[in-house]
Length: 329
Ligand SMILES: Cc1cc2nc3c(=O)[nH]c(=O)nc-3n(C[C@H](O)[C@H](O)[C@H](O)COP(=O)(O)OP(=O)(O)OC[C@H]3O[C@@H](n4cnc5c(N)ncnc54)[C@H](O)[C@@H]3O)c2cc1C
Image (tube, rainbow, N blue to C red; front, side, top):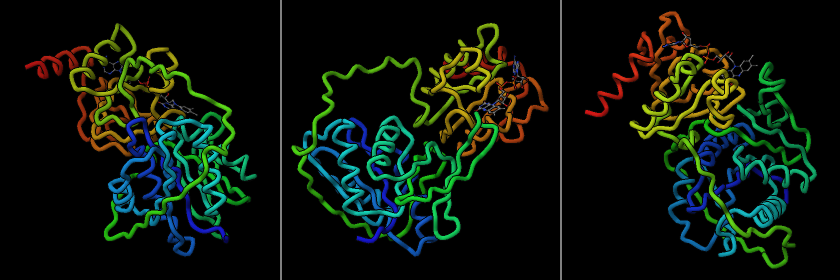
């Protein structure tokens, strides 16, 4: 079979919901497909036997032309052994020109496994994608610790990339027809190298910033005199996730997984509240897809204000307690 179109890994979470990054990738792929002779956008879902009707039509509204489903009750919950092997087999059975996978924990396992087994290259953690000369995928990603941005051309097929979450917007399309393909692969034939004996959930001190509606973010200005406690308190009142700048991470006030920016995460909350953050370009790169930005900073010339919808000039140690008091009313 001639390689055709773009295949996306349709990551499911433990509740059998599609990961938000999948919709973002489908939207981007629908745009890219126009540049490679209108080939199709396919999503491969590997999961338990459930009704996928709503998921299929939702993927269709974002631009998927085809949803390939491999289902078996042993596929409830992610297991690299099964999911990696099945995704690879689907990519062999329906060979695409391009494979896109979200740079999530699952995606970061599935992608290298697939690339090695398909004997192709992989560009990881991309922040942008385009089609270049000869209809080849051009992947963009930060390199040398974020000091440079590299455009990478993978010369082997399928061209593969993992893409950071929230760098693309999920955009609904009008009148897109989607077809469902229910495939069957004999799972018993997959060599069982890994058995999941028990899953222990990490006790997270903060909500997940990848899919948070509201993020309260701490900069270096909030990392003194116990300002970080105020940040967490405000976040709790707003039912928000806590994040921060690289400086806040380097000082040990947040974890790496909470760092926003070019060398951290890209986020797309409805509301981003930047507290004591100056607004360096590397930080702004991670918040450009936010709905509204509120900035609190005592320096009225701080660059963050140029990017904020609402700017509050003042001392965070006076402003945040007032905000908390208002929220308590
Ligand atoms: C290659 C490279 C990659 C990078 N990647 C990232 C990245 O991914 N993410 C990232 O964030 N940065 C990144 N950086 C660093 C970036 O350039 C900035 O140094 C960093 O974002 C600054 O963090 P900040 O705004 O918290 O601190 P500062 O720039 O020190 O700003 C602190 C702010 O707090 C304000 N402030 C202080 N006290 C108060 C108070 N009491 N009340 C109100 N306001 C107050 C100050 O006015 C100031 O504007 C990168 C840099 C390089 C070179």
